[in-house]
Image (tube, rainbow, N blue to C red):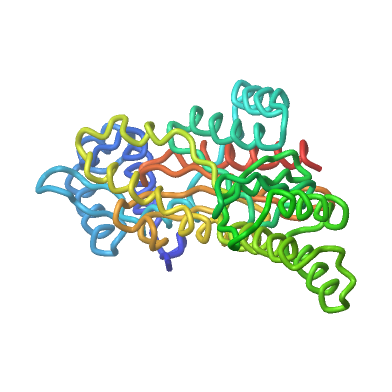
Amino acid sequence: MSSIPVIELSSRARDIFQLVVESYLGSGLPVGSKTLAKQGINLSPASIRHVLQELEERGLLLSPHISAGRMPTELGLRLFVNGMMQLSEPSEEERTTIESDLFRAGSAKERLVTATTTLSGLSACAGLVLIPKQELVLKQLGFVMLDNNRALAVIVGADGSVENRVIELPSGTSASTLIEAGNYISAHLTGCSFSEAKKRLFHEIDLERTELDSAASDLVQRGLVVWSEDSRKRPVLIVRGQSNLLQDASDDLERAKQLLEELEDKEEIARLLEKVSVSDAAQIFIGSENKLFSLSGSSVIASPYHGEGGHMVGVVAVIGPTRLNYGRIVPMVDFTAKTLSRIIA
């Protein structure tokens, strides 16, 4: 979304505009000329009103009701964020909380869940962590007979994760075929991703070197296809703190409900956050700047975190109303991402 450069505003207009935005972000209420006059603006209320009218005509402010004062538009917020916002480092207490929570967590997934929970608590928004789509690496894949037509495929990943899926069985599949298929995977395909395992299996079949009979070979192929397709489709997205979005929403409950509905579309959120993965710093999406949250008018602050060798691993983010304390929350998200990077690298 385009914005008007700060230098195009007069010094007087810039000062008044900044006061309006900062007051609105703090209180959530439109700001009137009398309020501004009390904050040290050396102008009469009439002169302030004239400047406010000028800013409104330029699309930076709007008046929700007659005589209700002004509040920033999305364009105004973008101008403020790009050129006027003063970023403040996370406080010592915030840094200590983030670092102690993340270092105390055990497994990699626990750290990511902790990151979302901690960010949600500190920002009073919803916290998110996106893990890029990636195939699990096989450690073990076994089959358990459920009935004559179905089996439970149980996978153990190299990262220690355990998941399962129900697959359909060819007619006449025996329990010994399930055992044979599981043993073949453990012996020949451990350490492979699903796509690598499929290529290796098909190569063995083409060369007629596979040790499997046709029934076991078919079963292995079914299991690998189910897991490979599922792995590619799923964005791994952790969301915590949705209840924060309903707090203080009595005046705009519909917007909060809309945002909660939008949060259910995890694939769209993943696509939005993937845009951040090419950046080295936090990015801010305000309201309709992103299609997904245009109806609720919400803001997203997101920052990538990196692993060994500086490779991007994922994205941490918060989602909340456009009326956020950007100067405080942007550095907080960025600090959380950098702390995750230190732990992972």
